[in-house]
Image (cartoon, rainbow, N blue to C red; front, side):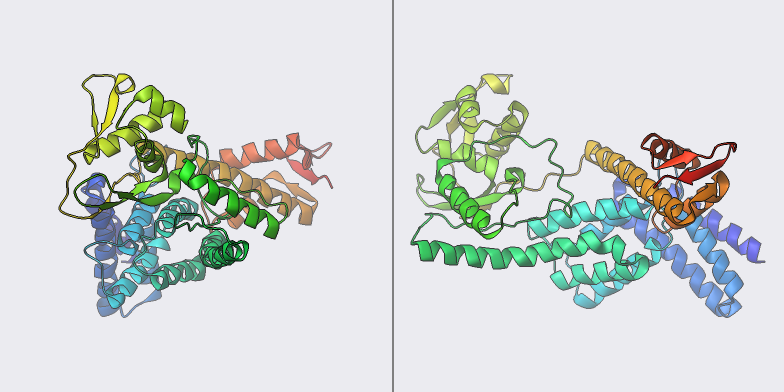
Length: 432
């Protein structure tokens, strides 16, 4: 009966999730998994009085369903979809839940999370989305965010949530830094002429890739603020290096040339472009490119976002790099406070691919560290014993493939951490 039940739950569950279209979003996927778990949990409780053998059958079936791979060569979609589901309920929106409902949803998420094999993929997607929520202040409540992290910590241990905790610490430290910076300015009797606040984030804790960042010539209006903060920060912390992430920054610009003033929230890239129109009402693409120093692709995207809200107009032509961009002197809007979207760009398939590739790199480093730890304590070990120990140490985060472990062993032999034992084909020795 136990085997029959396990097969029945697996079959029912796989039918349910195979019929879901991934583009319908994570909501339906997670709800379906929870319905299956709830339905069969109730059945086991009422019919089998929570007999451990049947509960174990439910757990095995749910593990199979949650880790189902449509493409055997790729990892399961569950970690990514569950992270996106978390993002949807923890982000501010028009349909925000009450505190009690939110708490229930977070508890439900952990039910599914415990069945996921690739917990490191979930962590990667979750930390990227948490970073966006914290930087752009999109979190529905900081208590809910901390509640979710403590649940993950309870399920996987401190090491798993260490970076997430550090992200929170950075946000609270940044508010103290801003206060100290304002005191520093008042003591030096310096006025910046603009309101200026910022987050100082540890590069090791935040998943903010710096590969595709465009350079930017900081607008003259902000140069003083940047210089003063660097002077303040370098005087306070010796040896730390600041890297400005302008692509994540936003600001508010007051538009005064129209019949009524407007306050527009824009990205720093958009601000750099808009401020050029203080001097002229019409500029060619090449002029804007030269003055902002943005890369072509980024500038085209920025100008298009401003044209979409009709702040600027584009001269006719197929090539955006050969057009002239003029200030729209007839701009009007019912609202006096506007936001030009593009601050938080949508996740593209390329971003998802990039995230999965970085998970692969992290796994290799994790496995190499595990092999070195095991070999350091055991000194000499047979190949099969080493494989088993590595798999058991990694199982809490992910299930490593045998091929990946073998590659990591070869890499450590090349790096001279371990060597093959003389006179034996399948034994390794630790090299101190």
